[in-house]
Length: 174
Image (cartoon, rainbow, N blue to C red; front, side):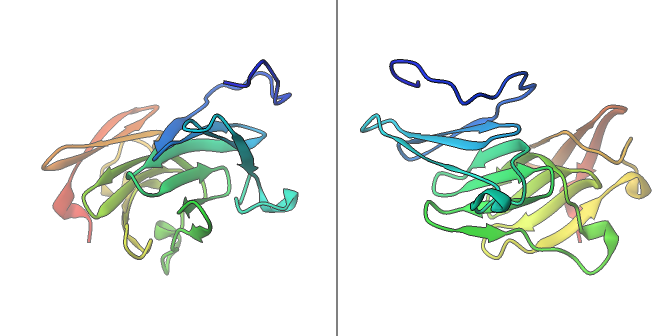
């Protein structure tokens, strides 16, 4: 999609999450940030970069991208942001270490909620406020702390870890 061809200079990327919001294609590159292209015009837009590079992201180590159709949720090595196309909003932090994740590996949007796979388990956020509701971890029965993938159905949240998948009843989140 870099016409005629171009390089970001990023090699050895293990994962490159992709998401669409409207006509904008987002590509997360570990060590770079989030590349953006307007597919309706073909224009390559300025990338979303880490704050130490003059950007809005907490880190340029991008692990996750998810869209709710209007906003982009970006998971990084040092936090997460909601991008509305113009500005970034921080994900809320809880009052205890059990609700203060800093690595965000995956997201899934479920109605008015967002579930995040994080370094401390599966965390639930309100889309309207980006406040953390609760996190479920090994102390709640998860097979491991770090949760690298999340999924949902009508009753459960699934958290994929390196030690298995945790099945969490949605009502377990406070």
